[in-house]
Image 1 (tube, rainbow, N blue to C red):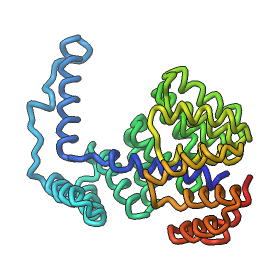
Image 2 (spheres, rainbow, N blue to C red):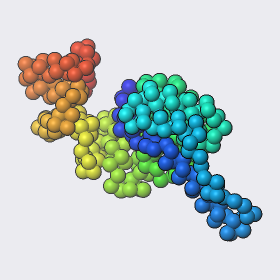
Image 3 (cartoon, rainbow, N blue to C red):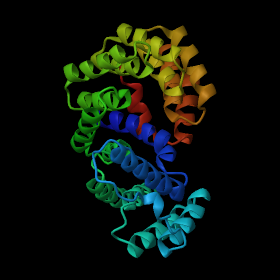
Image 4 (cartoon, rainbow, N blue to C red):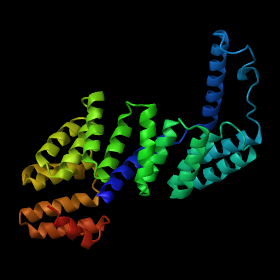
Length: 315
């Protein structure tokens, strides 16, 4: 179960990782300075603060070493040169350790370290950034997904708890926290999170996917299929089709399973588990030559034969 959960959230990590890098660090810093100045101006007009100059009266000097290094890091980010970006971000941090924008730099540093597989360093830097900006939801989300990927699910759950205190309607956080609860055997708590998603958005694919996962793990395959149907209506993915196919196989709906596997392979022909599913289908149909062919394809795409045979025995 833990391997299953970690795989699901690792997929989420890959899906969102690129979006979590600030595309233009300088632009973001300038925007933050502008936003702060506007807030100060509004506060002064409302009499909440004594009148004083705003930051806009003193333009940010982008010719300093700090900003020059950020520009160099930006070039590396645009080129997806993660090691180069990491080096320049670290130099920028060293050049001005008290700069209030360092939370943003630490966030980007952690993300490029994550891309390089430096998970411990990435977690440390996400944490340092959160020490500076404890209510930054993007930082909490990034750290939570990475914590799940390295097996530290209880710490990840604490991050999702924090996100949901800040943003109670965050359906992604509810979904991921629900998966963590499932991993810990708290099916009632997981059900509550998935049901809450559907109260927020009755058509949510995440809500239905969560409930489908829960019912599948409990062996309630028909209920799981019903929720997978609703999730797939919102957007078919190879993962959703594969999970519904597995439920169809367990329920001996062989024609439906065959259709789902074929559709999933059209979306992702490199997923080795799809060949395992098709091998299982061929086993149930007593097509042993085809089953052995699919076992070989599963191996070719990255699963060892012992694991394939173990998966074929799963009901």
